[in-house]
Length: 341
Image 1 (cartoon, helix red, strand yellow):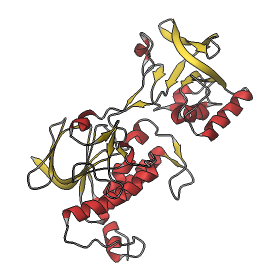
Image 2 (image 1 turned 180 degrees about the vertical axis):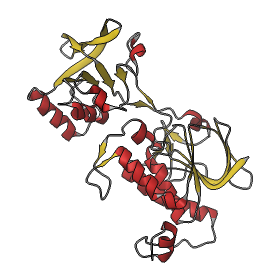
Image 3 (image 1 turned 90 degrees about the vertical axis):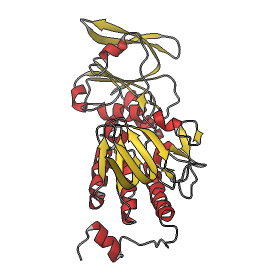
Image 4 (image 1 turned 60 degrees about the vertical axis):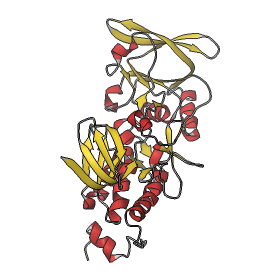
């Protein structure tokens, strides 16, 4: 049976969730599809404990907490989630609208589509050493699900981006030994995080090693150490009970790349007025889109979702004047949100 809805949202991360809210305020119903088995995208899958400091009104909010609050916020609009399935086919219907089919065989017919797929079907960039993969999810991790398992252990963090610095800072004082290894003195993380870790390293509370991992050692069937060559070509052996590798994500658009949308590298080109793609009726918000001046921030994605919702409403009801109503004062908004009189 084909599911019919106003809008199908591809991606159930923060921007996809907030898209439900903005559409709901305009009386548009949505179904969400995500390849992950959980709601929340990268925030839930890769960085559940990551603190976020640039969400308006929250001096700090955990990534998973933000996802939970967004789910609570959209409850009045009763969205339906289709998780653990990837959209494989998308085609325009003669006369308007789109048909979609997922890897689970679920079929949709939607009047509009919003792609909120983050960086796509993302895959962590892996540590490329022969045979190291046998330790994956045992001693080698590309995401953290249970930080407590690293407490009291010798931990090596690899990478120079925000994820690497965030977890290195999080585990200082909890791990028995904490070493951060990055290939150069040029970091991609927030300068404040880099400075803080450097201070901890200078104080002897952690170790910072600039170099590349070129090998590893084993003992009794377990990973025991990493072999590192530093930027002065000196060799080091760093004992490790656990290795956390954060080399970034390799974006894979998957089937999206075959839908005929205009791309800029791995991102979908949109116009910054409506966030519509090169195909009328298909929109893109969040990290997956590109336009001049694009900034990959969650708060930017929220703004994009709001404007996309108004554009979709105008597309579906071209003869109707769309009034901007404020949730603070509008009785109509209060009824939609279930605000008591």
